[in-house]
Length: 353
Figure 1 (tube, one colour):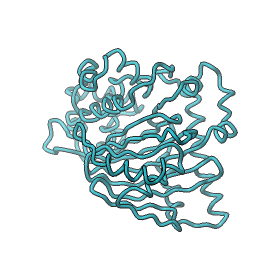
Figure 2 (cartoon, rainbow, N blue to C red):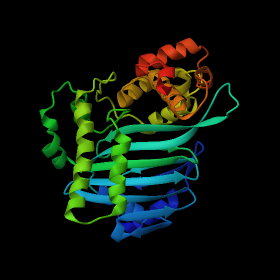
Figure 3 (cartoon, helix red, strand yellow):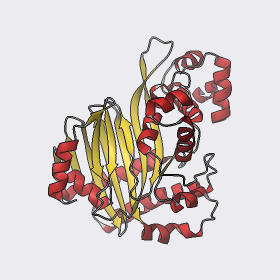
């Protein structure tokens, strides 16, 4: 898609509104195309010397920084605040090759509605990794006021094979099954220890924009260490939803199901049939596809996010433990304590010692 066609496309599609969210498309064929398409979108300022793109439009405000670390390997970091409810939508130009994998680490802060408390909402920080094959259409939902950081590592197949030897993986490894599928997208939660701290060191390096060989070497070491740690742990991860290449999933519907789960994090689990009806997918297909993408069932995903919210409230507020249990939707403090200890290995009260 040449620049003229892209500018025409983005002007025609940027205001598309559906299900309470504005859809903002971006071209995703390669890191070069991602950067070029953002540079040529409305309301942006590209400062080439900084390798940074600043944007401030009715939907979002933020900055995207990019670097080619070496041939076939890029990092793109975006810090953004959403002014409206937005769905970011990866699209592809069929006339341009799509030969880059993308590994994305996302950190986003939003507010969650609480139960049984005078405090109506509380901040909630979510983190996840997403590994996407070339040409896979995906969408991600973000609420008005959400503050997000996206660390995108893009690498082509040659670079990946040279550094990680995917071909040597056993055939029953879920990453190998994923790679053998036509396209796909899988996510992980806490697979890299200290990922936030390590990622922000990379962001600081990009912000300082030093061009000497030592700084470039540090950036290369930082990015490669984070990506290699991800794959080291992913190769060993025994996903409950061991990836199997079924028919191409509708990632938009999976993203919508995930949004419903996060919307109701402090409520009881909505039920597979209810969620399936809301997203327009059969219960069986939704259950299998969600587990294939996320590695856990929808009920387990909902429970995990509920406990992570409770953990953050214990660490960041002075609320009593029993009040936090009620606020996050647990009717029984003893059940909350048992689930919390099973997940984190400690009693809730021990997290405050």
